[in-house]
Length: 562
Image 1: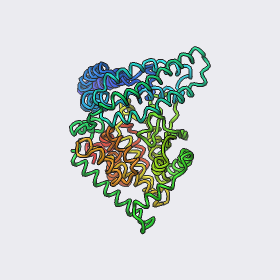
Image 2: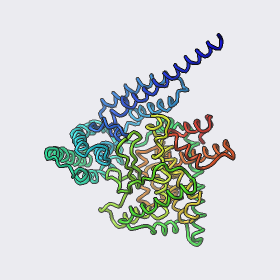
Image 3: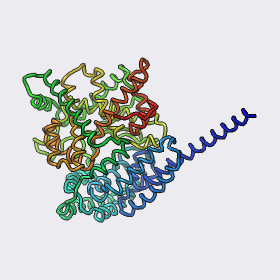
Image 4: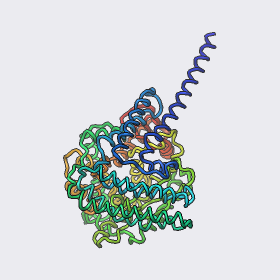
């Protein structure tokens, strides 16, 4: 009788656990489709949910309040589940991160570029992949374009006192965005034959171009003169953002110590590497010379294409990680609305995309309007060492390989909630790891390129914290990139601008250091059974959560991330 009763009790417990797990999965699905994607439908499309194709992101103050109410309701529902529920803390952190962004950081009141770039992105996600027939996608785009007047009306209503640098970046980006709608968007739908549909598109697209030009004029003549706001988010918001986005609660003063320690290590490594190339020259002179060793601007995309095959073959032959697909990413010029603040990026299909599985490796080329000095400085950042480092970061075994593994993630939350320390930390980690594993035959020029990128990320780490906690001015940030990060002035200014609106862009170095510690802890745990390939495969199979979550899965404990 006791045994029978025990069996029944176990069966009942199993039934309850199964029902609870099913209810949890439904709750997570509702969370994304009620609290997140209705307010950012372009992100929904990027994730592969095409019920949002005809909808436009909502930046209105009323929309922010409505989302807050929904988030608070979900916060109560999620908190009611046991702490042991898989991904419970991950979803709660995402709720808190969204509320922090809406209510405390409030970029929707500060950043005019958020609106014009949202318009560009809204068109780009519809035109960039063939997830539906071209006529159907054009109808979705027209529906989105017809909602854009409200987007710019919301901008005028919401933007109170933005920081001057935010308005300047928005103005800098707008000519490229206008050109994007004038040229690139029509070209993407040139094969549409339906005259009525084409006529409707010409009207809606012309209206968007007119709205963008009017918005640019408004920014220059009205908003810029009164853009006197502070871009700094402050120490309290900085700590909370790190805790919610990355599940990192290390005090900021300790983080700065960690950042400076890694900066000094990489600077010394850079100097030592430079000496092996030419001991009679300073590291700055070596860097200047390496910066001249780059392809012509019109050969830059091909240089990246030539690099990828060798990387993939090396990963497979040296058993560094498993590559789940033979399909290669498409290398293209960076879309106009992304060019002001990024050199290169990987645009992967969303984890729930069923049809359009293309991936785009975007590379920023010099603008046709630039001076020769600007072009030379830009291309110096694409010397052959940095091209390799960037190809590793964006493609193999960086973001592209990461994206190929996303189907192995254990849950919806793990596929859709992406921690930058996991995503960018992994890509940055692979830059060093590949050379450590012998790629390039220990060529010091390649190591110099990798270290130049590492120093760039080290500078981001420190400038982000120092600027946003009020200990460093914008100008001091630029100087830090030049003197400590060994960057050119053009790149230093670009990077500091980015840091004003991307305060926690320390996540590259922070994530890399977390992964290095996890790798060492995992090696110690497995002992002679450890292999680098198995570590990488298991890490990649976790999805994209904060590394604290991966540590728990892989080590079975809550040991410190650093």
